[in-house]
Image (cartoon, rainbow, N blue to C red; front, side):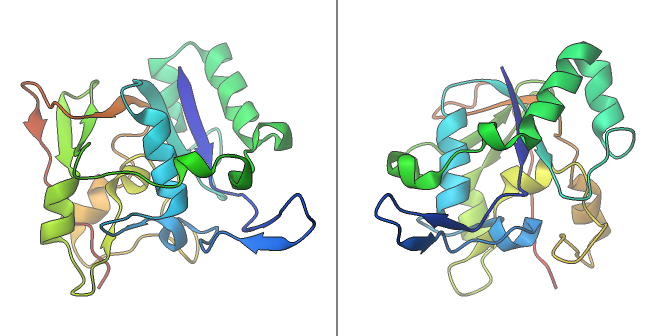
Length: 198
């Protein structure tokens, strides 16, 4: 299963009764890549899609180009025609999900399902550690999933930017890897992420 995620989506949706509804998250990478004890609706929905369902994941940004960034690595990992189809499908309007039709995906229990697993690299990230150690002293942290799988960070406003070279170098390193979220981490090694903008 391929999960190529375009974050070039509309922030405002219309309810069935015609009333406008805003999800409270923005289009740019750092406008929706945050996590609290309750997460946020977009990131929670993606986590639910990966819950016990291994998928190849890439977070396609609005400046992302097929022939650069991490995409060439993706072509190496999966058959090129399948890659091109998945990449194009991520941008099609018909494949966009109206979040109002899937309210059941808006919440996610990061304590119950604490492990973001990378089967390709045999690594995991512990959401609980992120929440505990990366806090901005207000209950909010940067969500590791979107940054680790981002395909085009550093090209525009709203991207992740840290004074830490180590953190910047981690962005995108999991793009096109097979990921899942679950309760068990197996014998994999923990990747400790400290994503934090200065």
